[in-house]
Amino acid sequence: MPLVFEWFLALAAAVGHFSLAVWLYNRLHSVAWPVRTIKVLERAILLIAAIVLAAGMVRFIWMCGFDLPWAGQVYLLVCWICAALVLPLWLVPKLRQRTPLVLQSNDTQVIDVAQQLGAPPIAGRQTQLLARIPGNQLCQLHVQRKTLRLPRLPRELAGLTIAHLSDLHMLGNLTEAFYAEVVDATNALAPDLVCITGDILEKTACLPWIPRTLGRLSARHGKFFVVGNHELRLPDVAPLRKALTDCGFRDLGSRCELLSLRGSEILLAGTELPWFGTAPPVNARSESGSAPFRVLLSHSPDELAWARANDFDLVLAGHVHGGQIRLPGLGALISPSRFGWRYAGGLYHEPPTVMHVSRGLSGKQAIRLNCPPEIALLVLDA
Image 1: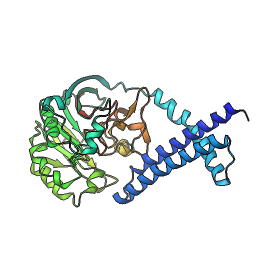
Image 2: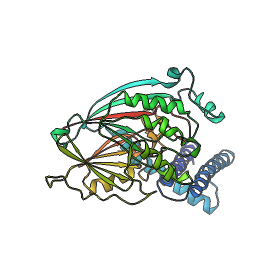
Image 3: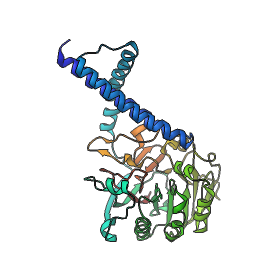
Image 4: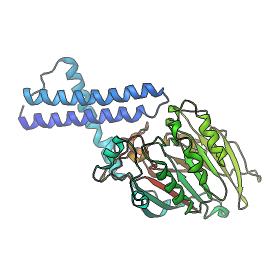
């Protein structure tokens, strides 16, 4: 076998091995397993992936061939199959992905939070180390005003604005001052509604931050939230729910609310599946007997199929952080969803539903490359 061909096969095996590890990692974080189990399996996937890749490459270079035991030959075949599937199932769809026509405009304001505060709002040695990585946009807050043309939006609701926040991850690696800046920037948008789609708090030590930060958020017609999978890390999620409701938020976990605005109705519903509760009841009707405009708050974009089946017009989701590290031209690789990168961040239109997936504001890993934190103001247009 020519040496060049052997190196090609080795490279294909490495690509397949890497893609299989990413596939497993992404799907692992889309299930409602115990936190400790998730952590153990996450570390096992990363460790085994690194060891197998290193051992395979060393063996190939030293032996310059594929003389492996039968188990190694079977796994090598699996890797080659995975590599062959990368092109049609990953690369081509990624390159063909386009922003849907429902997005009429996207105006972005960049706020350098560290510059605003006079110092980076970070804490902890690991966060400080990661913050020094060239290109890390950890404190480069993007405030994005997105105008959406929604086919079924009642004319009375044209111009309605929704501030969509997600994945705040209050755990102490970003200080309270960072979240105070987020609140100030959101209030400056003067939204009609504020909607938070989960992963708000994961350490009880940060619970006192809630009234001093999110408690200051203002909206003309109400503030709403659902929680996410990282709230499973709390001893009890009830104190967080109480703190938010005491601050004027309405808890939409497994619930619906019918709002009357401008002579029209909006059904706001929330799902925290698969981690908390059940699907919300969605049989509410407007006073005229017709179906109201429907908005779903879902921590995970994986609930899009359920939203479409239940005739939702708009879904607000988070969870995947835009991938946190986005490759130029290719976008996210790590995207904790059973659909992988497909709904990593941005706008998606799968009729009758439009879904906005926030890149989020923070994360457990304090690194963001080509994927800045986001406040989104969605301006609805008919």
